[in-house]
Amino acid sequence: MGVLTEHFTLADGSLIPKLGFGTWQTPNEVAPQAVREALELGYTHIDTARAYQNEQGVGQGLRDSGVPREQVFITSKVAAEFKSYEQAKASIEKSLSELDAGYIDLLLIHAPKPWPEMSDPAAPRYFEENREVWRAMEEAQRRGDVRSIGVSNFQIDDLTNITDHCQILPQADQIRFHIGYTQSELVAYCQAHGILVEAYSPIGTGRLLHNPAIVKIAERYGRSVAQVCIRYALQKDCLPLPKSTHRDYIAQNADIDFEISADDMAVFDAMSID
Ligand code: A2P
Image (tube, rainbow, N blue to C red):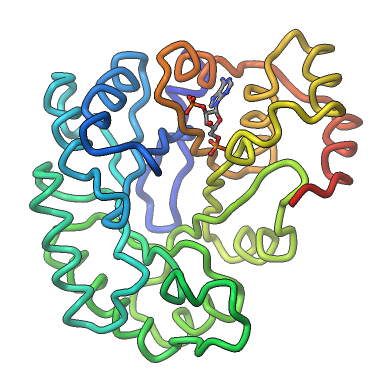
């Protein structure tokens, strides 16, 4: 089954399946079927978030699949707008009850700033607040409600703000990463510090599907653009989280036992796509 049976090892020793199933924008009522199909097709790693408002459906899909809980890795996230200890604690409790899966394998801070402020360079940085959120997450890990903790959309200074003060180090940074948008300085920092990079939007939320240069290379491999994009992330030692609600796409996205040559990787590395 190739990539579906492989794992990365987090710095804390936990194993995380190498390919995840993303559920951003999957409505709660669609999530049970999408998650069940992904699990039936052999995925063992589902990525959700408090903000996606589909944790209940994700948990339902897990139970419907009949796959034992301990064989599945579930990631969720504390909503970006929750920036106090109390709000983070409440967010974690809500995620646990909505998922109803006993524990969360990996819990992330969804973003360093509330979403409306993310693209505003003049917005406050929430350094102290993120340390408070982190404290609630460390406690959840100590209680056993959460197995590993990490962050999402964090830049290097957001990360050092945590690592300079925390007791438990962030295990992962889930960021936008795809051909043409690789955040290479951040990725190099994470990989040098034992922080796994998870790649969301590995197909550029679908925008890469019709990129002529990528289409041409994909044709040469006899693969789809989606497969080439997902494979690219893996060859960069990033954990891809493609998302789809179509069974044939979900299956295809896991069928990536091929190798992109160093020359083609270099062509992709040189691209810039926003
Ligand atoms: P759909 O939701 O209709 O299945 P990303 O993972 O980068 O966010 O990209 C998600 C987008 O890519 C969705 O629009 C999804 O379509 C589409 N997609 C995912 N997998 C494939 C595939 N194998 N072939 C074509 N489109 C795909």
